[in-house]
Amino acid sequence: QVQLVESGGGVVQPGKSLRVSCEASGFAFSSYGMHWLRQAPGKGLEWVSVIEYDGSNKYYADSVKGRFTISRDNYKNILYLQMHSLRAEDTAVYYCARGFSTSSEFDSWGQGTLVTVSS
Amino acid sequence: SDVLTQPPSVSVAPGETARITCGGNDLGSKSVHWYQQRPGQAPVLVISYDRDRPSGIPERFSGSKSGNTATLTISRVEAGDEADYYCQVWVVGSDHSYVFGTGTQVTVL
Image (cartoon, rainbow over all chains, first blue to last red; front, side, top):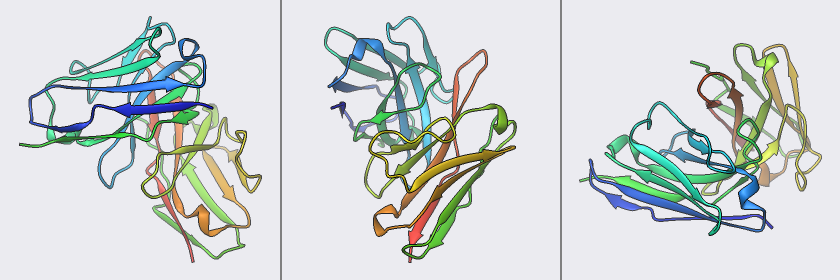
């Protein structure tokens, strides 16, 4: 069955960088759009970024545009989110999620990885 | 920017029906998806495209929409339905935007 496993979270100082990963299995990874979403402690869900199935198009929320970069390796079935210039307000659980196309629902989610930005 | 408004909380007795609303501008022209998030867990899709139920989701979960208000209905509520529920839409435009509702905490009495 579909499995998405995030990794790479941790504690990082403000202004520093961090890369989180999402390893996919159980489906044709290269045929699906993939998203990153996040949830700050005690808050609601926020969409962060999406990448089309072949990596040809990428979109970002205004809150992370210019600081975060989404990418994918369709040979290794891994999704990445490179985060730069991290701020305290980026502290959240980061989820990867699958969407057949960029306009479709998030039909499978990983368990999330916690990123804490703190000095 | 698009805002999806949900009631902060809904309380319901076991066996009764819970209804969670989601309101927003031009919701009638958008597809609404619903997610369940149990405490400490990742979200799970329970309704897609206003009323479609994914495989594995109980028939007790149903979705509907009228005008600019979408509704998630949980019939014969069970203790395991206690969770946060979020509606979500995709806003088409020059830049992709995925908007979530404010979330509703369902408490089973």
